[in-house]
Length: 356
Image 1 (cartoon, rainbow, N blue to C red):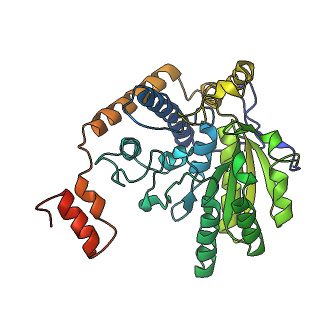
Image 2: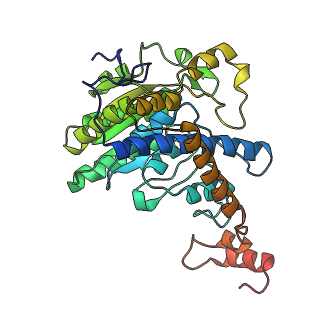
Image 3: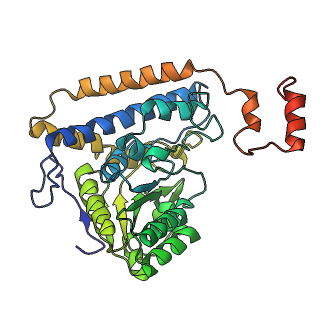
């Protein structure tokens, strides 16, 4: 393939190209589908919660489920994940609990970080998923650092970092790609080109024909994949991660996709794109496309029942998390110093008499 061609496994009618099909076992195919459906259910409910004032902020991923779920399935135990704020699906696919995700969004005592991060800034040490942050593409140099450390230690692991098309317009992208190329590091750069860096269209960000071709400047291979095709994403990311683990260096993957909703709950996408454009991409919905494939294989009988089950799981998780108490004020003075300095002790004692 050239770095302009887009690799697809699933055809529009839901059948698969047998020469490219990764050949996943049936239980894993169903797991991919159910995680995609769960991710969509989380998005729909979280946006509704924000609109009703029950949470403060959320970054949806509707339309991009094939990207994060397909990429997450390619990660193995021991690998590192440095995700962008839209890729909670990668964590869910790797076993990050739904209850933990919901707790983090609410920011009460159900949140492992005890409300110290804004929503969508989740992390999980047990699966080597490093904390999300808001600045665009700052996770890329961090991922490269982890890959460099793994190589120095002789570890046969790979590092996955995810980001959007806007991330390729940053200096951190250049620095990370260059370092990865020079030192032949085991890091996979997974760019989800959803066409907009918030409101800025991709064609106004770069003069290059594709984002994948930027890899050549750094001595890395670059490929394009259909980001609405979960099997194609799984194949390309899986091959890249295997290549990285084998010591063959990094890769840039451009997943061509589209976010159907807003950039975040603070965004109004009707200002910068047309409903006709959104409708055209809605017809390429990755969940419906994969459902057609599974039905053709006789693996999926009732998509509506799957969706209802996912929504009920999300409802129960939110109900449980909302029952958790708020984070106590005393946490303001915890988890930073082994021995609290005098000036913070004074502040604590003035705020919380009797706690000193």
